[in-house]
Image (cartoon, rainbow, N blue to C red; front, side, top):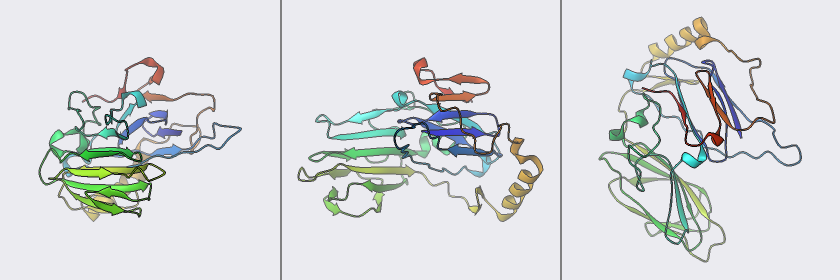
Length: 265
């Protein structure tokens, strides 16, 4: 479980398969904390925090926030249920721009032509699946092996180390795990068209030039990106509070059905 709070006043408690998006744009201060909810057992957390750059035309958009609950995140299973894909972003495994959750409006991932995809792939012993080729041309695609080192095969080549594999996005890729293995293998797949602009980075700031980095520091010193509206810097919500998303004064919980919490275009 993770607690989010930011200088715009948005907040959330998420986990158990939920997906949170945040676009920093012209500037936002945020914290992601790890509340100790469980008193009698360990408070374990495993999550992916993925940063996606913005093109120069969107660097100074208003900050944006979205939360999608676990039951709203698309999943695919093979017929024998020995391979599963969670599609955090992207239009694959029967997902379309109409059916898939939409990232914040200014995100590079919002435009289907950029073909951004984020997938968590799990293959059980004896399982196999085909990762379909990219929808667009000139897409960068990387496959991160994160769990299970007994010898998964990627297009017939056995992999036994935690590695990042650069894939040819123009080709399907076969993933197979022998039934002699004792544990599942997990991958994180990231892909997208490159923005193809200069990158200047210092600390948490990512711009296009060093002059813009200096301006970002100046903006923060002058405005604090709106200040901090919370009673503590390391904002953690009450232990008894369930998962929730708070956006623009409206708070939603997973129990409220198919409602999503996100900024609109």
